[in-house]
Image (tube, rainbow, N blue to C red; front, side):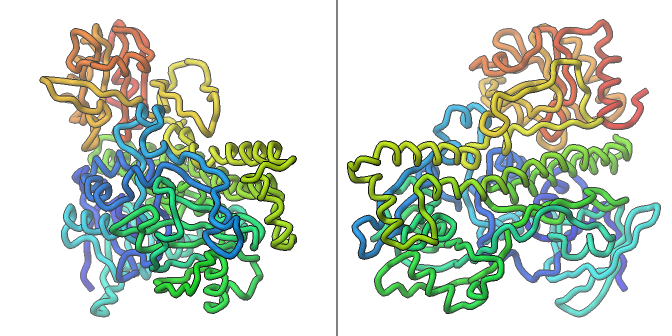
Length: 593
């Protein structure tokens, strides 16, 4: 038996576990990651990485490699609905409609104003090796694949875990203060008796990952996801969803592809390889289609969430905390955000800078957000049937009937006006999935780690589609480019490395002085500066901070290490140090004397 002592044991080597490993390393906290699998995922899985995720990956240093390997912005501007791909009908391959996706390749002004990082697309089968390599470079020898957790007990000092090294057959124990369960719910939750609640068996899906040249049949370089509304099969989910996989070329020139196809939950054909391939060939309609099949995976759409996000010294994140449909790309992103929220809090407690109750705010903050993501992902999946309804398509109809229903979209027939507008409205409703900026980026937190300032409750103009930058406590810090000594930086990057950030107005020097004194007296990682258009530490060259700061020139905003506003004072204070010390005491769940 070889005993290992480490502050944090991470169980699971997917997006959540690897992000936790990288983030803890970035914060100077030692960790050990173990996963029963010999390698990263061999299945395509998730692929969309939203702006907040790319901000996090920028902080830990892995974003450049991800952008290098991912879909170019020009190839991920839109999603499109097509009458299949090709075939013997004159309607095959026709575009029925399209919609911008996730900022339209970083051309939507709202997305550009929200973050210095654009949404990116890299399938998990390509992403995870990049994350693993970077995690290993930050924490050599402590990212261990093919190491399975076989036992776990908790005591007053943390956890003791038993790990089996599947490479050499040995076992060892790990003593850790905290355990992060990022194992997809396979092991830790079962050992501790923590279950998951929510709807299951929403849809049965089969995903085929294949290699083939489809460039002769596809157009529209800017389209990322193609919904094959093939009238021969009667609708969108029943036909298939086609997504490029790269890896070297994207758009119609992609070398690899995946197709998602819906089956009835009790359909035996979903389990039969030849039947699945026959349906794939029928869906695509490509003559003499003989692709290289890389994998066929079956999965069930569900919308479940862990009954607890914390059980003693164990925390659940990623798929161990929530699982839901891939529609909207919220799953992997939620996992990354879980890790980012939890890691700075654990680091603060481990350093003695915060009290244990700070860790309770992980569930208080993340569980409502993750539940909202589940609700939206499920609604997104169901909303695709709106397209079929607008077109009046059904698997119960004959192919001839379905083709007659879509023909008015490209021919001028008496019903063309109504049919085209009905489809336009149905596609517009899909902005709940493809422009859900407030869901994926603008979500807010409410916990004891947020000091409310008495301002009116936030009522969004649209809770799904419109992110509204604000410094109201609990909101993500608004983005602004600022300059100092001729160098332009995103203001939010000042939190990198686990720093609190005190931003005062032009005349708020007393706040800055107070923050610096508190940082020195209590050994807290606080950066403090004035930001303004004129006489300030950082120059607000575009006046973008001024536009959203919602404080006077004497006020201040305190931002947490995860870029969420913890405290705000619209104006100055008679005793800035006492006010700020009180706010930090609440956030950190400890008394700063």
